[in-house]
Image (cartoon, rainbow, N blue to C red):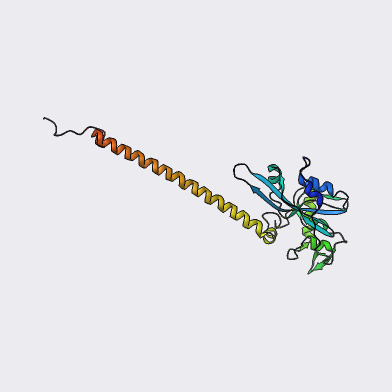
Length: 242
């Protein structure tokens, strides 16, 4: 696989544009490309920072950016799109809504063909094409004509397409299979949060128990000095009639 980081990606920070917007500008003369949300991460506890990594795929090369900081609102808006194309172009066709990798090339005879699969129409990518390798296409998740039609309907409505069985994106089975590191990292972070919370609760309970013990000790000492009983009255020797 021919890989390489697009140099212009490292220039982000010179303006106020989002990293993806800068990448799109740098690729404006490219005949086709896909920008995939490769990874995402948040750092900090009270004051958080948000980061994305992108994979840029062209017909005969691909590259992964370094971590690029993004605004919280943009991070949250794209949180469901891990592993998906969030911007792209094929000829004059612009991809503006999130779609699974490779879908934008389905139906284009440059990249493959439709064939019959036991009575169903199946898209078959050209395995000899550099694009096939650069996109890391998983053949265990075939694209049938009905899938492609569902994608086209979503595209016409300008809404994200997660697959006919919701198998793509952050919560999809395809992503969980291909990006185990992300989910392991996320699980470890959630476990660390729970452990930290448990420790804080333990410390608070310890301080509360200590304070209660001190108050009880103080009351006991006072009772001894005043000679009061538990009812709060002074004790007397003898009874009535004396």
